[in-house]
Length: 251
Image (cartoon, rainbow, N blue to C red; front, top):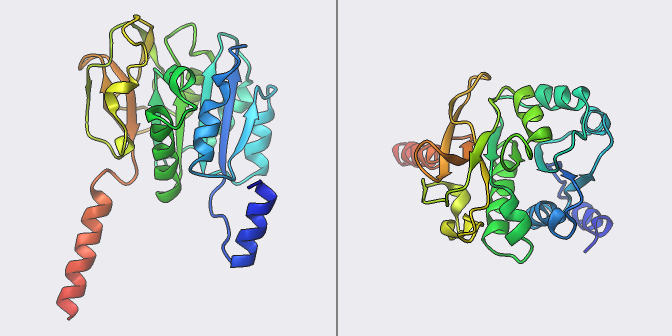
């Protein structure tokens, strides 16, 4: 179903789309799977828009003209393809009311996504979390300095420390996360034992005041995916229990 048809259906049923999702892909000529993040996001939000290799300044212009709730930035290039205005616009857009997911091994979505498997489910879970919980930002790169040129500029502008280093060990551990719903997490070690390299994502307290948690890692000091989820996992369930207890008291 195309987007015009979806809009017509929503209008006919009296339902309005409450979410604007934007996917930005910077492609250095990989071809093939460069659209995998966008296609996976479409599985959660069929109305998502895609800026593919946007000209410098185009991201800033888009954010100035559109009401964006959810932002995915996929950096697959060694070239600087953005402007300082783009970084500043994302920095102004992001605040601690929004979730954040930072992926230093996101090329797994390029290599193993596109077939409805675990990489796609992880991205769709992220998009659904954002849409159901006030919005968020996902930034995916690989190792530094080669493959973080654009992604790190956006991270720093949004008040995070950058993705650093180069790790060629497999992902050996993970912590519980709603982003893993239906995902065989061990499959996100996309290297397949071939020692592909990834970057280390920031963890802990960030300059913007949020605290990132490590949910996938090669070792405790080698984080590959970090998250700041709003509300904190379990908080929504706790609030629901409080509400049920209040209803019981009123009865």
